[in-house]
Image (tube, rainbow, N blue to C red):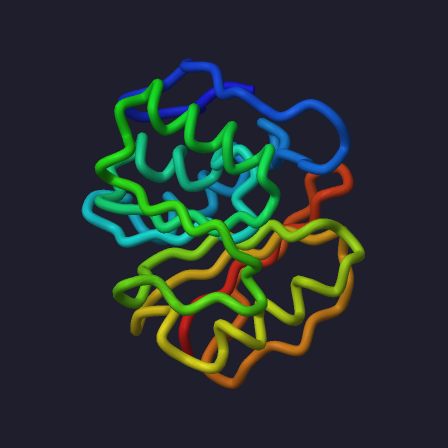
Length: 180
């Protein structure tokens, strides 16, 4: 797994062994960032959150493309260790905050985000729980964007967001939302 574009393009990312963490495939990540680039134009200066971060691939990709800061949320100890090592080897620790906590009970980032990535374990029900948490407020800035990767389960969207795009990349179903 490698960073696709930006200042760290081509740099490899570490991933934990075993099945506890399922990183977003390079193909799905490339498709997602293409969808976002066509809507955002630039990632420069964005405040980002990476929920269910795992290796941190999505948040790190945004940082590589110019995002100012990313708050990473992850509860698995092995994934947290790998994510911390990935940030360290890229020199990105000063642009990141790592919160070792479950998303469904977490407090929002220090300021509302311009972009939130959400990639919960497939079929766990955590996508809806996290979406409800985000919809409660304090997470997404006006005009902000939210990417949700699932295996295709139906989600009840909060009133403050509307869908703008939907794509499938193998098993990954990506829904792109923006604030209403």
